[in-house]
Length: 148
Length: 415
Image (cartoon, rainbow over all chains, first blue to last red; front, top):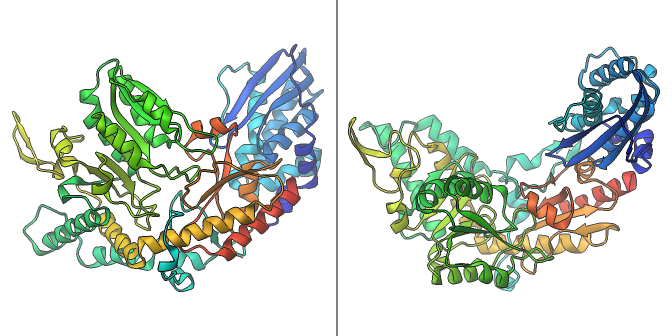
């Protein structure tokens, strides 16, 4: 297994320069995610226009995989409707956890860079934390999310 | 450890003794395994593995029960193991050596059986900021149960327990001092002799968490004069699931049993049960017989090498690691006590410890990353986690070079 499958250029770039990495004081929704074992901690903020995600951002700290995954998430769900974002969550979940997943990686764009994470089982929860947190924000969940 | 007269000792033949540990000869992800996670759990020599297999192949029966031959043989081995451990830590009597599952269970036993019946609201339990969760949570639980309160001795920036603050915190309401002997997260060797003397002079009993101390330095419980001492088999080349609670006989005798069941009784009727003698009063149910036998084999192995030679070899590794790691740009040592066991905790600038752990694993290097079950220590240094390399006598300077090379890969990749 090559480490470059995990730490692809896109991931290294998004870890060094996370996109949409900011507070959103006027967010309509937000939720906290926390992996107590790793110490990965993030907050996802969402602004809604009807059922469309008009803006999304995050803040927090964690490993390269968790930060890059959250950064990529914000880029990929901005402008999408809530049902479309949830469909994407389903695809990402399959991509990260199922060996036999029939996911068209091409269709995921930059998010496809996370396909190598599946080969490193200890790190899957790092990549999925932001997605579970987005899901919680969209459903106004109050309890912090954990993926451990 | 630094004061050891190293010149007087013939060094260990590490190349030869590595062959005693079958696990060390394998490759991980195509690279030779470099096992530097000994503070989490050490590896076992073949003699320990063989002692357990041999017991199951030839001797197994329940102990303290049958008149048949195997039961008698198993009992002899089990009680022989207790005597081996007693001698190893220089306790006065085997009545003071209680077999438990590990350090965690030993601390919980003392919290529930010694502390809980005695504590009243306003009483204080004193611990330090350096403790492993296993020496924090059982005391929080007993405080909740009794209305006592938990007081915490601060640590210094170097990661040493602040002795002056300890003296100030020692009050007329202090009912117990529970202190680590060696910090698992930082490697600090606490000068426990001083703390024990001061506490006992005030009539305060002392429990020491020796999980990280026993495998690496000679522990003499009569000289230490503490009241309780707890340690685990699996950190000292023995099996998992077996550990020791040492307790001063006078205190153990006064304590009620912790768990009820077979083996801990002399006579049972529905109106009254007479508890067994020490140490059996605290060993309800069939014990981990094979674990005790394996632990005794581990003690024999360590004594064969010599604890003083082990300490000297590990100190050499620590000094070499400190020197080599200091050359890595962006590496910050967490915990820089004067007197340390062979544990190095650190962070790498711009690289999260979990990424360090994954990248090192890919190079065959096993270290621990995370909070090391010592979240208050992480909070003290303002870090969510650290990377921790911890050495045993079977590690080599070559392995430290591999650690350093792998850290440079991590820095190159993500730093």
